Length: 132
Image (cartoon, rainbow, N blue to C red; front, side):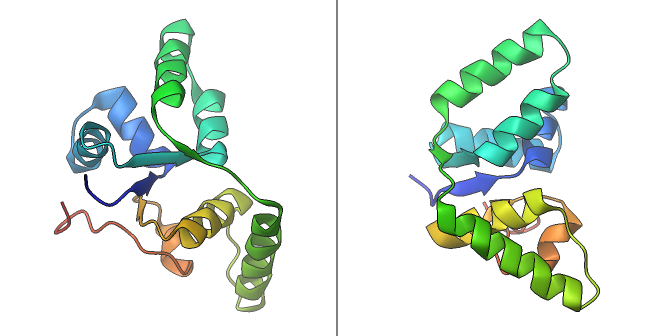
């Protein structure tokens, strides 16, 4: 089994909607080798964007079969402190991305994403050009 990887919403969408491209392929590989992990933020974002019953059923199946990192009370404080520190530097990021990064940091998981916001967060990222 490969090292687990926390998959960001954009990567799940690439996999679920088109299933094509390097990002979707990395998600498929993570699922195949049981290294895919999601979190509550991603669950919420995916449900928000579901377009109908078919997609909702796909998501229900996904959520039942992929481990989910739980949010702990301290994660909210860490994410808030991270956002405040970045804001003092003139960088404003979404709470959702800061919380995903906080969970990834706590669990020592890289994040599979193409979201540029994560470049500002202290978290390991899966390099789509070289990592397998």
